[in-house]
Length: 170
Picture 1 (spheres, rainbow, N blue to C red):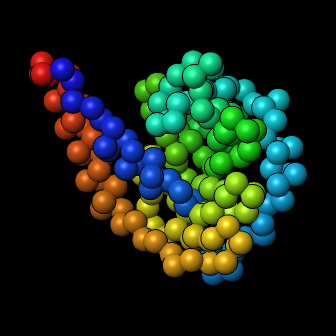
Picture 2 (spheres, rainbow, N blue to C red; picture 1 turned 120 degrees about the horizontal axis):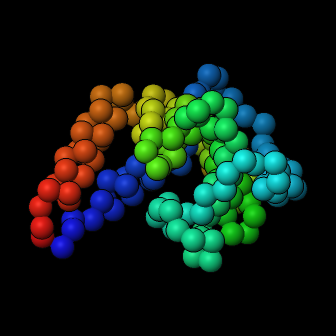
């Protein structure tokens, strides 16, 4: 039986709630719900990836989210994560690694009301640096810091777990 990757993947997903490189202390201008819904339209995107609740590839019928991607270069994309209610949950840069699209670069997460939840930087799927955070009313919450060294450790653990899954029968 294979050892699940869920804890590390869930850790990586949960470390997503904030995004974009924080450059100032003031929260970014709130996004109006109407414009969020309007911009959640999937027309104009070059690739659609359907994801389940754990952000794993799935078919359209089982999808909880859709990742709408626009290609920038061979391996770089701008992406928008859209939920089943057609609301934008997050937007930012992605990089294709193997068959996966990992968050990479500036990222923004949104509350259901369309206001920014968090913003900061990703490095190939792992949060790094300072992340700005806001409550649903737009009031700043304490920043969170994700050291770059932690990203290296998480990647090393994920690689060890992958090797363990491929190389042993459990």
